[in-house]
Image (cartoon, rainbow, N blue to C red; front, top):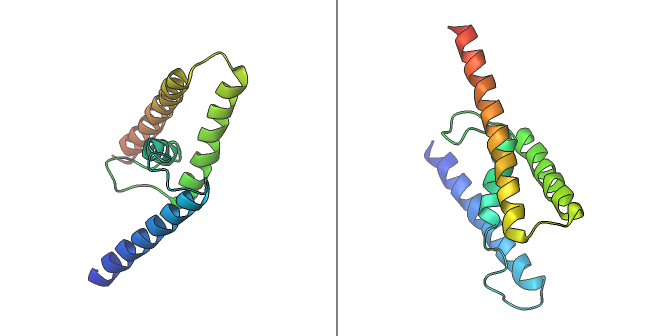
Length: 115
């Protein structure tokens, strides 16, 4: 168990360092605020993929499906073009909230059938 925890933290640190290096190399300067707000997008994508925020259930494949789905939602909002960035974030959050409710209801329905 301790080896697994150390391996996960090491992999997480490696990925964070790689992301920081790529983030610094992309605009050819070290812009510190470039990735701000992206953590909420990551959480939204994982929740859309079916992972419970309380823990205990979720699959990587679901998260990999949630990322393009969230980006499609954001792209559709951009194509409409009538919303400001703040409203785009709010609409994306509302879509995530709807998906969370659907996932929670499905999970609770399965749990009731088991009991």
